[in-house]
Length: 557
Image (cartoon, rainbow, N blue to C red; front, side):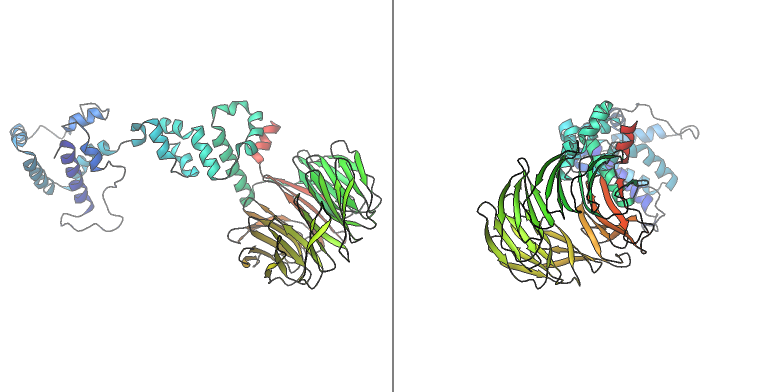
């Protein structure tokens, strides 16, 4: 047995004596005399080369002279005893030390522990080559990596490694270009810090702000007088609200100023779509209009429908509109030309989805239709609903339809077959969101439900003591969260995975007495709500909540 092995054995014998009484029984919980942790394994010790304890101290960077006990002159015969000890073989020394430890008082054992224990506390990360040290750190979750950076200067250097944080951000689904580029341009001095680490910290802060509510007071944007805001779009730093006052307004999400009022429609605006700075609106005046949101110019007026334009969906430079005239029209937004007309519904078209390849429409004739817009052929008529179809979702493979008959149906888009009928709601399903086979539905029965469309199972019903008290008006997915607005004047935040209510993000003063949140739109960092009332108890307004507070504060500075 080498020197390290001997020292290790002595150490554990002393530790055992401290952890157990002189009779060998463990001390009661909370009464142990010392704590372990952070020691090298025997295999690591066996590879070391020092042969005496003094050599070990030198190898660890300590002075060869350690502080001696100064309780008096050394006992007589000490040198003879030490010479005798040195003459013994290794096993004989161990036996002698074992007997000696058994005869020591606790305070004496503690003294020996204080001398020996530090030699086994080694910073293994600093001893490894940098590549291996970084590999070890890859096994830490991001939060532990942040704590490790506070250990010492060298650990901080390692924990700032940009490639290490790039992998952590990828594991968390964080994109540097989406979450950090703007900040980097604002703060050039931040280049000394890992951009990927900064991106992670920023996203963690935003997530906390969403869930815990550290946002300050919302920005209030007043407009449209006392009219109803019927549609809401949000792209970048621009917000566009449409109203039954015949206008749309373009707002700055940063300053809250009204940048443009888009006038031209002669009837109420009922639907809109937006891509970057291009806005398309549909109205009761039977037209669609294409606008440049930055200049306020009406680029095209699209004529063709013979009744109210009730719904639309934009994909690329094409928009598909559905009307109360029972038809759908496919328009080229760039040229303003109507390219195709889809006929087949026998009542008003209430909802439409378009993925660039197929058009799916739902109407008051209880039907859902799947179209090939290029040939203007109806590929499938999906029959099964027993009342008006009000909402649709389409991901290319599945069509999901919500109806006044209280059911939600999942259809195979290629075959036209009904895959599942989702039951549980008690009234009209007014809005749905579909992502990665998870469907969230909002209903006039005041509940929100989460479904797996592959199995047809309801995963969660978002209700309980904090549920909405009236019909759900709008909902959205955001960052693993569900946002739902209601006629009760609130916007509630739910955890998508657990179905738990987290908090009320918005609660109008007139909630419960006429205040309504009509529409919501959310990005990763902002929430925009269109609110008002139908009885004059709440002014028509937009509320903007910013969850990237530190970033905004830096830009303001």
